[in-house]
Length: 144
Image 1: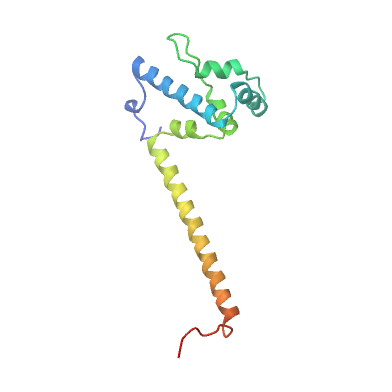
Image 2 (image 1 turned 90 degrees about the vertical axis):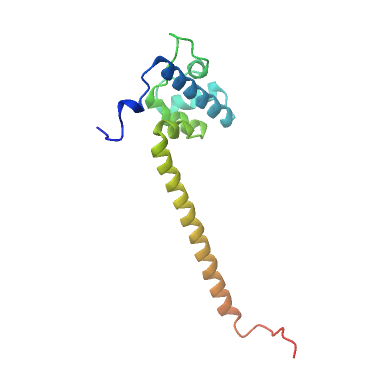
C-alpha cells in the first residue's frame, strides 16, 4: 500500500462523493465541449478504441446532472480512450491528484526548458558557423 494514501485522502461522506461526481461530470462536459465534437462522435471514436459499444446516450448520461440513486459511473478503463478522443487530459490529471499533478507539471517544465536550451544551443552553433563563414569578408563600418 502506498504510504502517501490514507483514509483521509478518500471521500468518506455522501456529500463528498456527490461533490466528486459533480466535478467529474463537469470535467467530462468541458472536455467534450473543448473537443468540438458531439457526444455521439466521442462515443463512436471510443467504440473503435475500446472495441466495445459506447453510445452517444451513454456519454450524455455520464455528463448530465447526477440525480441521487441514478448516477452513472464512468468505467475507469474508458478514461484513457475518452481523453485521447477529446484531446484533453484534464480528467486524467485530476484523477492523478495534486501531488502527481505537480510532478507532471514539473516534468513538463523541465522538458520545455530542455527544448528551449537546445534551441539556444542550435542558435549559438549557427552563429558560430556564420561567424567563420563571414570572417574576413566583413567591411569595416568605422570612420577614420
